[in-house]
Image 1 (cartoon, rainbow over the protein chains, first blue to last red):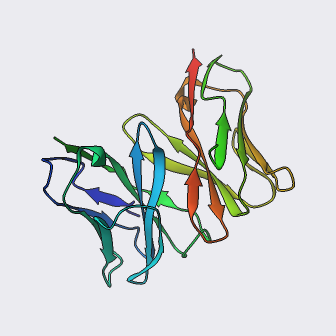
Image 2 (spheres, rainbow over the protein chains, first blue to last red):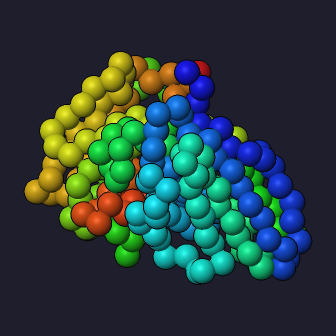
Length: 114
Length: 108
């Protein structure tokens, strides 16, 4: 059974650009959550999608957005990139929304903004 | 003060030692998660618990809801246990708040 797949693994962008990251959940999982990890702030929750709807959102500016497709694959987009957006972006998939089931994490996308 | 506090921040121990990592939280929770992150970023969910105690191999997680405290124990520690262990509290709005992590280094 394939795990959670995130693409790309590494990305370098310049300030002001926008970026789209992709997450393919484990087959059958309908919940996808996104997290940002930085050395200073640690892991922080971005948002959760379930059945193509955003169910929960963390405290991030509107430059951070996401969506989920009918096959449960999810994308997150960051517009007008800032240096501080450099981070490891992780997604996790789960059978159920919220904390009802175990979450499985992808390897992450390491974004560097220069 | 963070809503989820872990201690210690760093821990170095000899192979075979019994390891305890602590997590205290100040929010009402529906579940508490323990995660393991290896160098390179990969995260594995170790436990999800809302009461009592869970055991998986050499790993044991306990939670005391009244005291808002959870512990992760590793018995007979091994160098391959070296990783960052993260406690995450899921509040009643289903938002997850992470601790800063405990960096564990087991020496052979």
